[in-house]
Image 1: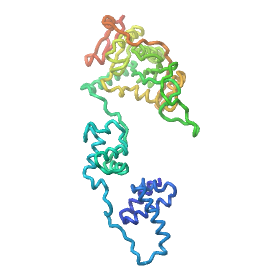
Image 2: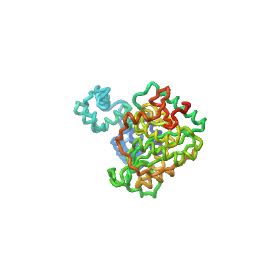
Image 3: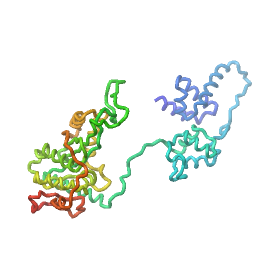
Image 4: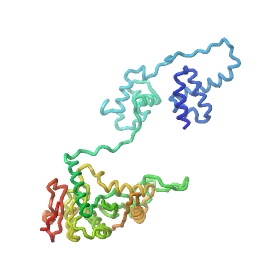
Length: 414
């Protein structure tokens, strides 16, 4: 707050004061503040600390010598614009060379020595000195400020290449969901959440604890062999705003994905949709439930045969996995619920997921799955031909229905 007040006062007074009086003014501000005042005033006004320090000395000398000074003494005040010119104004190539180091791909040599090093002001000043410039790291910081550069983190915005039918596929999925909802048929969004290490590891975020007593966790994130990792696979009911998470301790395979859907049906789905004869699954185009995964289709066939349900599947188009409803309607809230809490055991993970709630009524059930799921299971052409799959006319590789094998002749509206 004090810094902002100093900044506002400086803006009002600076145009009205000459160089000497301005120096004395900022010195007075720093003196009143006491310890740390010079640094605070320097940050608020942009005037260097040495200049403010000099002003403090002059302020003290002026106060002690005022009574003894002859009335005829004239204080010389340098004209505006006087004094040594800034290196930025004298060195014609400094700006372009600086931008060349900061942006080596577009404005300079691609082989810039700073291309793969930290672009600190000290590194930049060292490289500029090698190029023949006389400049300090303080002046580099000032120059970067004038060029409107600041430290910024990466921002996730690029989704990669976009399929020409991306929007059309989203519209198709939306229409399909509305059709199932109108018929009181279940619609679920599925996906595997990021794998998590089990143990007293740092977990992003903060939680309320007694002051000065943070949760103590390991310094290094090396996996604990006896605890390993967990692979939470989620099922989100889009109609009833409920979630089911199957926390696997083995590999995330297509068999594991379908087993998670099976457990959701046995635990929550069948009781909610006792009259259902169809099920719509919206899923990403890759991973264990990818559109090209053979094992995904053969396992869904087993599930269809067991339940008698016609399993319709709609895959999101490439590069849009973050648009999957389960990401922002279930997984995001789970991450918020366990932020700042080390996932020290399987029991803790299951309890934290199951305790996830929202004001909009989201409820979640969770179960630990200790079964083994072998990686690299091959599906032969003959096994794939046994899948009773009917592909939709629009992008059949993304949109299809798997019918129970004992009801191949049943006509189902797609």
